[in-house]
Length: 579
Image (tube, rainbow, N blue to C red):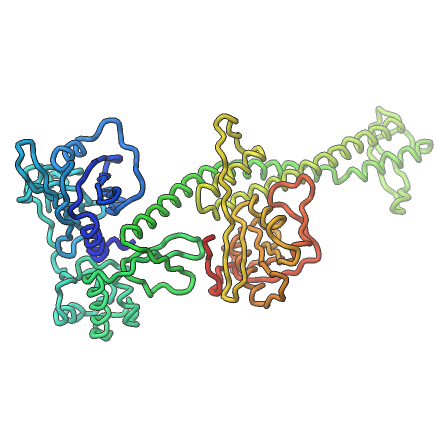
C-alpha cells in the first residue's frame, strides 16, 4: 500500500481545503495509538482519524464513530486541554515527508491566543502523533521515544521537534531535471533507484513511472531513456502539486480484494484487475482500509470455522477407515453361507471330524470345509448360517453408515471450500448457519439468535455480455441452481470435487463455445481443484440437475452431462460486477 509522500501531499491539500477554519468540537482516543477529532463544519460535522499504529498508521476522514474507553487516556486529556474547541488554521505537509502538520489556534485559560502544531507521522513502526507549541517545543506525544529507544531522535516533553533528514534523498517536488538525470547515472535497478533516492516515492509509484515510460523497472538506470523517465515523473509530480488527481483503488478480480491505491491512476495494472475511482483521497483511504479490516476480520473468523471443520473431517476420515475395514471383513460372507448350505446338503454322508470333504456344486470342484469336531454336522451348518447372518447385518448397516460418512465428508469439504470464497460477515453467517443446521457446531439459543442477512452470489459479466453467477456457499448454490436459473441456463461444476455451482445465463439464446470455456474456467477456479494445472468440469442444462430428497445443502445429482478440461483461472474476458 502506497501511503507515500505523494499520497500524503494530496491528502494534506484535501484536508486543508475542507477543514481549515473549522473548530475541533470533540477529541477521543478509542485505541492505544488512535485519535479521532470531531470537527464542526459549516453544515454538519466530520471525523478525522489519526493513527500511529506501527502496523497501520493512517490519517483520513472517517464515517465511523469508534467507542472510547470510560476513562480517557493521558494523551487524550492533554489534547483536550490544549486544543479542544481550537480552530484549525492550516493542514500542511513538511517537504515530501510522510508527515501532516495541523496548525491549531486555541485560547488558554488566561484568555491568550496560542498556536499549536499537531504532527501525525506516518512512518511504519516509527509512527507517532506529537503535540508541540508554536516554537516546535514538544508538549507530549502519543508514543514517547527515550534515548535508549532511539539514538537518532528522542520524543519527550520539553524537547525540540524535528524530522530526521534522509541522507542521499532528494525532494521530488523541487528536484530539477539535471539533478534527476544525475540521480539515475548508475547501474542500480530503475524502480529501486527512484524509490530509494527520492523522498516520498513508494515502490508502487516508482514502478508506475517505469510503466508509463515503457521501461522494465528492474532494468539498470544507465541503460534506459532517462529523459523519458523524467518526463513521466514530472507529469505525475505536476498532477500532485496542482491537485489534479484521480484517486483510485485497484481490485484483484480473482479474489475480489483491494490490492493497491494511489492518488493518480495506475496504468501498471491490466487484465485481472479492476479500477475503482474515488471522489477524494480520504474516501479512497477509508474504503480501502475499511475493506481490508473486513477481510482481516472475515479471515480470522473463517480460520476458527476451518479449525472446527478440520477436526470434524479428521474424525470422519478415521471413521471411514474403520467402516471400510469392517466392510472388508464381510467379504467372505457368501463363502460362509455356501459352507452352511453344503454341510446341510451333505449332512448324511459327512463323518464327524475337524473338516468335511465335499463336492462344491456351485463351482464344480471338491473343497474342504473347516468344522468344530465337538459339534454335529447340523450344528456346524447352523453356526455358519449364524455367522453369515451377522456378517450380512454388518455389511448392510456399515454400507449405510459409510455412505453417510462419505456424504458428510463431501459436505464438510464443500463448506471448507466455501470459507475460501467468503468475502464478508454475511457470507460467514450463512456458512455458520449451515454448519449449525447440520449439527457440526452448536446453534445459537433462540433469544440470542440474530437475523442472517442474505448475501449475494458472485456475478461476472463476459466481454460478450453474458452473465455468470457463482455460489459462495451451499445455500447460494441451491438458490442459484433451483430458483434463480432457468431450464435452458447452463450449470457447471468441477467433476467429483467440492466447489461452487456456476450458472451461465443463456436467455434462451445459442451461446458461443468461448463462453462455455469461460464459465468452465470459473467453475474450476472456485473449487478444490484450483491449484491444479487442469481440472475437469461437468456441464449440463440446469433442468437436468436434481436434488435428492433429504440431501444436504449443495448436493445434487445429474446425468447425460458433457465435460471439458480447463485451467482453473479467472479468464481475461470477464469482469466482476458488484450488484
